[in-house]
Length: 112
Image (cartoon, rainbow, N blue to C red; front, side, top):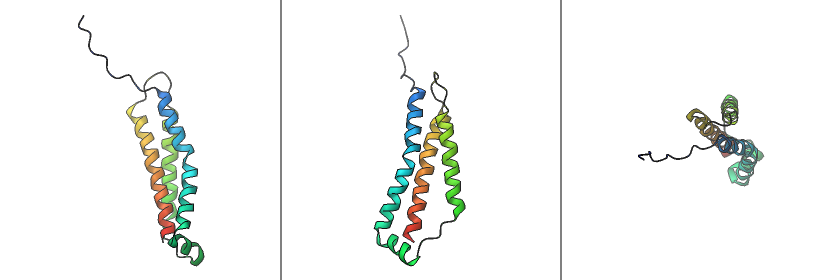
């Protein structure tokens, strides 16, 4: 008679995998759009025409891509059936953060 109120239904693992899949697949188009927008600016054009591009170390690009790749795999491999753990959701947000950081580095390169 005194049944506790049911809590919110757990988010299925499929939702997390779908979000991670789209976040990973939209990374390349977002990068291309960022490059096009950067080249449309005056500083981006000067970067290409006069070589006044910014100095962003290559290891920074590689490390953000490695973090994004690891987080993407972690978020995509959530087992079906059980609700995803907080660590899997953290991997999704780490993936998104690493991608945004990479896009910021690309924009900083063209900004000079």
